[in-house]
Image (cartoon, rainbow, N blue to C red; front, side, top):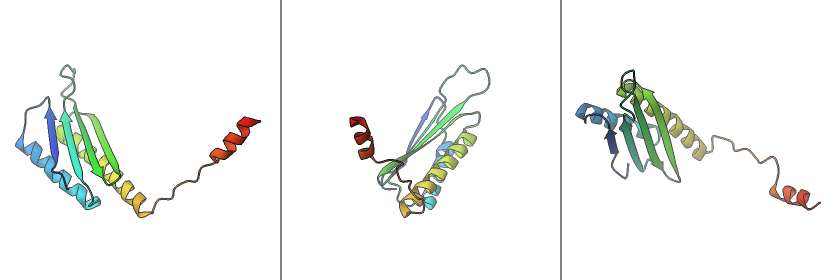
Length: 123
């Protein structure tokens, strides 16, 4: 990564183990796509009045050349499960992005041309 990993933890006590886990997971992202320019991770407990245990939200924002990939995972009761699911979603999106820029994914042609719409409106 060109820009160092940014980690934000809200609503829970800061933990070196949690931060270390996030660093390890973020390093693995580069195995799937090595042109990541930056990565921001937010872990939070959005509301403190849930009847059941704490609910964790994870948001991972990955900047890649020409795009930004956002992966969210909401409402896991274990922060490590929320991180695992969030990073799995990010990996799937990175793999899709890598296939797209390599040309492995076909793009669909539009079903109509804009000129055809303009011609139909004049009559």
